[in-house]
Image (tube, rainbow, N blue to C red; front, side, top):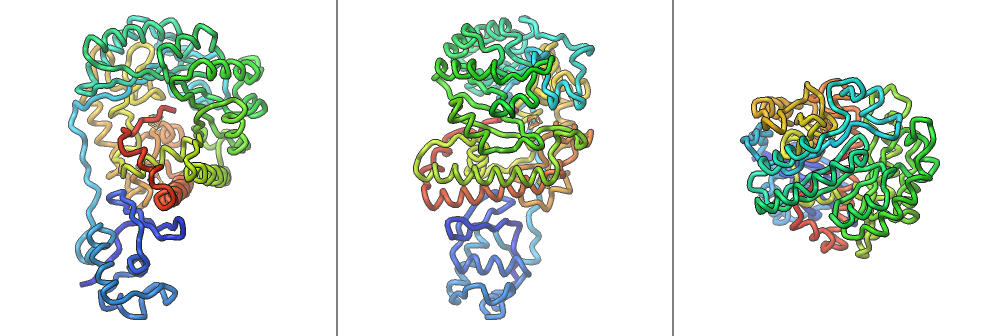
Length: 488
Ligand code: SF4
Ligand code: SF4
């Protein structure tokens, strides 16, 4: 019998070899013989007899193993499907489309498409926008009635889920605070009547965090994410008012007030990385130590490549270097059971721990939908209001045919560029909005950032392996947590 390696990614952590098995998204620590056998088979298929010999493919630097050791390694590697018989085809990704109707877990409600800031890189207002929020057909603010209809829609579509998640988004969300407030009251009341809990969160630029707003958010236990880019000189580079004035001096004290008063839920910062503004460690330190955020997440700017703030290939490499340094800081804190707020690494560790293997890059169009100010339902908040990405309305419900057509045409099985990529269980081609902005097509995989995705996934696998060896209890925290859908 001739053995061949199946699709995998080998890595080392804490001085030990590990393997990430792509079809199953499982992670295993290897003993020396299993590592030697797998490395040999990764170079070329071989028989058991060849593997026992000294002329193993892969060279003599590989440590040897006894005959029983090699037989045991082959049996174990075959059991976990790290290897298979050469002539038995490896399993291919099945194109399974979830049967509708499946429950809606998160509704992102764009309560306004207007903003009081004028950030040059913003996907909603800049040159890359897909919805005309100034002169288009969408109202600038969601009405109270549409917000109520949206809540009814959410509760109806949440199926048997006990908890419905509502995220308020904009524009600047707090420009429509009166409707947001009434929506929360209405949703709590309707949820209670139906025996469901409704969880609320919002994203804001923090400019309108007045004392009464802070009181309300704290009293109602609303999860808050603040869009902020870092210290004054970084924040004020792009996050400016229409007259060009920076926003840092206005928002910093407001955020501190919020953090002082709102203690029931962790408050996070969300940073947009642009070219020339990627001193990740310094930004992280400022936001956690000087401002006091519990968690900070970073995302590269979504933009077409010719904008001056777009990340180049070298920019992605630099970002990876910065992320790696911060991820190892996260590791050392986690080994000592100290909190570290770098949320990018924590979210990826959680997905790795749970063996997440995605047929679609995110929940958009599936368990997550965005609602535009007029009640049109779209893939997610970034497409809300776009006729070409419409999936129904809150009044008429989800257009199941449109939803199915979308899912049929966006499955990972059809992304041939991704079919040989070991990072596809987590990436699955990447964000549809990014693809739309880059290539004008949500179906296209985001091939411009593959090196970054694979590099970052490799770093997170190494951190995972280190934690598995040095503090496995840290990873156990993910056992019972449902995977959350990040909204950015
Ligand atoms: S987009 Fe690139 S990194 Fe992502 S799955 Fe496809 S090939 Fe891999
Ligand atoms: S990853 Fe992209 S497509 Fe998916 S929900 Fe986020 S912004 Fe929308």
